[in-house]
Length: 299
Image (cartoon, rainbow, N blue to C red):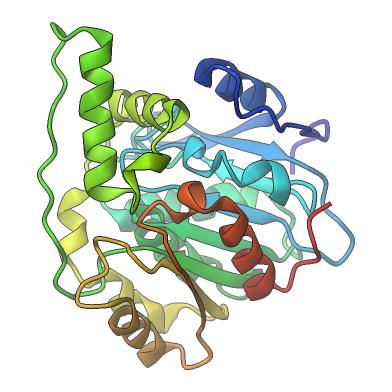
């Protein structure tokens, strides 16, 4: 791994302006880059690897960035080293070379991990939504390098899923109206309780949408994850929000698909949470990660 200073994060001021929260969190991270297409893939690192505790690598959802994990990074970084990527074509990362598919993106992620970590370093890989679709290819590529692979609230399982139409903001809209559009879209897909949609969620969602170039929605209707899981050797884990609007016909049906290929599957279903469970119920999500990845308690 390149020689980079360790980064610490001591953050608990969620009442600050959203732009300040994101800037503070980003400034506390070591930023590293690996090849991606004609540019680079961007990685952010917080915390310090604890003896015997593998680092955690987080892959965000579609049209997102590392900020999909913003509510859980501070606590996880007190346990071990936390890496949050910007997936190819999203956030600050360049587009991969074509074809633009989860498989090509997963290969870029796997190559980046090989560059950033030494060969004997075990890792916990966690993929949320589209990040799980990319992550299954990464996990298959990395083989026994992974201590666990955790899927969180994904599609691409070959099951029916709700198709959601989103409103679009226009450049002529005043800021308040733009924010209302993003709040409505978050309520339609990401949250089970619209009252939990705060200014930080709206700010990060809007910023991520504006930077998204990799179009991922078409892959949700595929069965790419179960088709690739037989090639994943890492122990499989899953975390779902009980009220995830995409979890049709049921969360249990999704677990059943995963368990067909990984009977060792361990799961945690988080009550009163929707699709973006790591934001809507961060404490419960952290607890689930600790349980499934056999991590010590957060400081």
